[in-house]
Structure formats: C-alpha cells, structure tokens
Image (tube, rainbow, N blue to C red; front, side, top):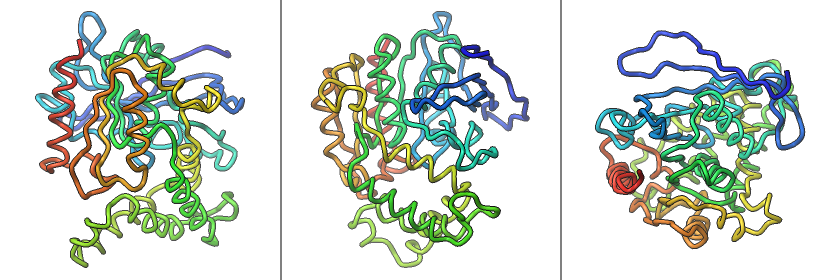
Length: 344
C-alpha cells in the first residue's frame, strides 16, 4: 500500500475546552535516511474552526523535549493564537508524545529520523489528512523553529508566514556538545544496556535533565535564584527527562543535534534561506546560550522579509517557553499579535 495515506480519529473524552486528540496514519513512510516504516502515527489536535476558504490554519511545533501542549497557554479565544479567527493545529513530532516513537517497541531499531522527516510527516497531515493547501502561519520554538524553517524553505508556496521562537538555522557547537553529554550520561546508567534495556534507565535520564538545566538559563538568572528555588528547578528538569523513554529521548536529541537547513543545499546557508518568501518573525532570547544569537541573526540577515526582535530576559533559552503572566510571554504575545495582524 505504498504511497497510500489514511486518517484515523482516536476517540477520547475531552475535558473543558481542551481539544480532542486525533491520529493521522501514514503508510510506508520513507525517512530521509532511506528507511521505511510501514505505519507512521502522527498525533495532533485542532482548535478553532476552518474558514470557508480553508485558509486560516496555523501549525505550531514544540521544542526538542516538548509535546503538542507546549503552546497551550497561547491558544484560545482572545489569546495570542485566537481560536475565534484561526484553526490551530498542534502536533507531537515524530519520536515522542503520542506519535510513532521508539517506545512503541522498536527501541534502538526505530529509524534514525531528522527534522526534515518531522516536517514531511506534518506536511502529509496538513495536506492529506486535513486537506489544506495553505497555512496562515507555521510557528515553533527551538526545535520547532528548525521544523518551521524547513516548511518555509521546502514549501514556500504553501506557508504565508513563519513565527520562530529561540531559533537557529542549525545546531550550534555548544548545543551539540550539550547533547553529547546528555547522551553519555544516560549511557553510563547500568540499566541502559546499549539501548536494549529491560528497565528504562531513569537515573541516567534524571542526571541528563540536571546537566541540561544550566544551558537553558543564563548566568545572571542563576545568580539571582534562591538556593531552594534552584533545587526545585533542578528537580523539575530531572523529573521532566525522567518521564521520557530513554531511546525516545536520545533519538529526539540526536535529530536536533544533526540539524542544518543548508544540508540539502550543499552547505550553503544563504541559498537555503533565500528559498523562504514568507514574512518571518524572528524572536530569539537575548540571553540564550543553548542556541545563541548568531543563528537567529543569520536568519534575520538571510530571509528577505524577516522581522527581528530579541526577547528581553535573563531566562536564557527558557524565555521562549510560554508562561502565563510573565514579561517574556507578554512580549512574545504582542510581537505575534502585531505580526499576524498583517498576514491575510
């Protein structure tokens, strides 16, 4: 059944205003590596209603360790992504959440996937599953900005705007080293067993989460943080990583680590970014040391219709994570509202 697509709805009980999770199935999905998965599951949710012209869709993509609920604080009536005006689509990227991932049983045998594979699966969902030929916006944070850039580069005819939070066109060396250290810490857990474990290596995952933490904040933030609050945030980071299946986390971070939008263009970043014709909102954190500002400025300089503003914050990479009522979220909200007001 190669090339055949199918959509399936997964029934569940919706609570309050929450959207109902749904599943899109792609048969014989071909990865960039050449591997083929007989059935690829893409979990997603939609909020709001499609316009008569089916042209008010907004796709939002989460960060590396996130899921489809990452943008929940910004979605709803009167919110940043107003569901009175927009049909908002959120997805679990390949390899995590309720989408197909190593935890389903393949473990280390799950295909090594890329950011472009994530984009391809989402493109299938949007075009084949939801039958949309255009999107008002594609937006994402961190890894989600990687995916969004790929949308703008490879489907410029379809994407009418891009919203990039804590973005970069590629994984910078400091991020790559961080991923290498995370992976090494997990592998040192005796339970790891080369990724063919009988028991999830929770302690390795927790330590990886604690190692990751100082990279997503800034030195000034750590300097003003009370000891008890620091201990709490370290524990939250440890718990967040500990909730993952280890193979799923390792392969997800490997996909982000390897990313470079210029790869299909012979390493020429200028050529890659020139493919983007859509207005592009670029919102890096002024104190991001996980991805840094150089990549965001490369996007600003390389995309013809880029709008650039740095999020004023000492939260580092975490400044792009929506937290209701925070100055950072208020800044992001205003920037996105002003930007979307100009997108028909």
